[in-house]
Image (cartoon, rainbow, N blue to C red; front, side):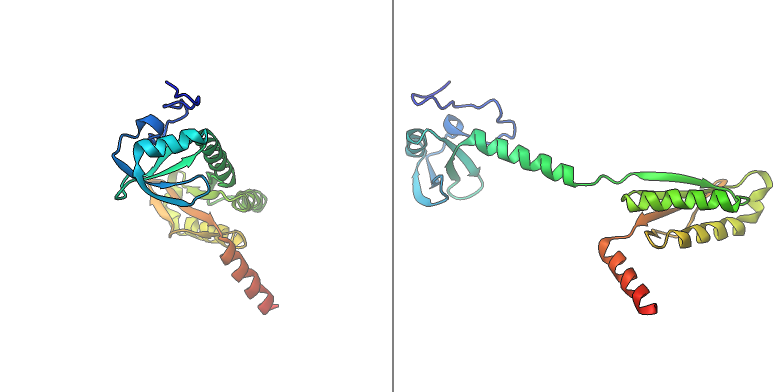
Length: 197
């Protein structure tokens, strides 16, 4: 249903339950024009007329206010800009994954260093690393070796990450979570390294 100026009462992109145009059934509203200038308290019918005269929409932006606040704007453009900003902010957000690396208490130096390099690469990319030491058969009696391996591994990742909590025993496994350093932590580490040199 559209009015005489061609503005529609309901826009199909109105999925956020914002009341616009003829959906606003209030006696009076505090009106703001398209430039952000307050126009005072007017009847909702008068506010709709002013919006339609400018070929724009009347949008209820603060329903909880007393009286509710409405703004004259191009709602379609407003929704488009809002969706565009949300997409851009989602792109900028880096979703961190948890990568898992398995070790054994009898791991060789080359294998250990290869897995350490993988972990450091993951941490640089902003991912968390869950390091698991798996005990086979009678190896479970030598948990101290498992703790030593995890400690050595965490020390090898110290440039890029830090252990979130102490290692946890889970049945025949011993695991620790290494999280990437925050930018301020990296800066502090770099400064302390320079002071030591």
